[in-house]
Image (cartoon, rainbow, N blue to C red; front, side, top):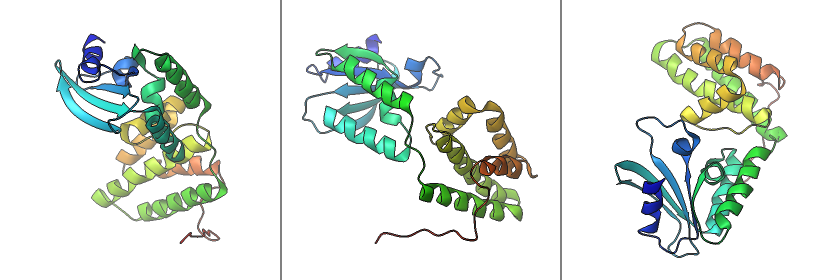
Amino acid sequence: MDVARQLVLEPYPDARAAWLGGSVARGDASTTSDLDITVLLDGPPAPMRKSLEYGGWPVELFVHTEKSLRHFADKDQARRQPTMMRLVGESVVLLDTDGSGVRLKEEYLAEVAAGPRPLSGDELDLLRYTITNLLDDLSDASGDVRLAIASVLWQDAARLLLTGAGRWSGTGKGLLREVSAYDAALAAALMDGVRAEDDRLVVAVDHILAEYGGRLFAGFELGATI
């Protein structure tokens, strides 16, 4: 906390607010974790992010105005991955000179709790179609080709599982963390299936698809905007 606060005050003495988010704030930091620090300014400078080392810590620094915070939070909503909202909402307030630190933390925390917007019909059909094609590709694949397909398949299936249930999605380890929090047994089945050279992944993915109408190929149609 002291290192993070000092890092904010040295280059940004006029900062309105600052938050420490990420794994350190959550309490599950590892030996390689960094400090995720978001700083609120009236502006300028323009919004930016910077990676640096300070006080023995690797640091990811995000500098924003209220307008740019809202812009990136809206992008989070569109992709159903609440990165910016969590950096502020699920944080420790480092600095709050005008009440905006607590106010924005509460606003974004409420948005995280509300969850993402539901899948549209077209989005659902596209996910089912994409997963169906990956399952077909997996059926006669082996070795490295199978592993490459499986690594994409489990992630698309996990996104369908989460967004269909009104839960936030993620990428990489963040996606696995979200699935494990929602259904630990199914998350384990997906990971076992990726590693195994048998049909365990197919069974797990078909189980997810069954909740949304099963596999989709014949009859799939999606218009394009040019």
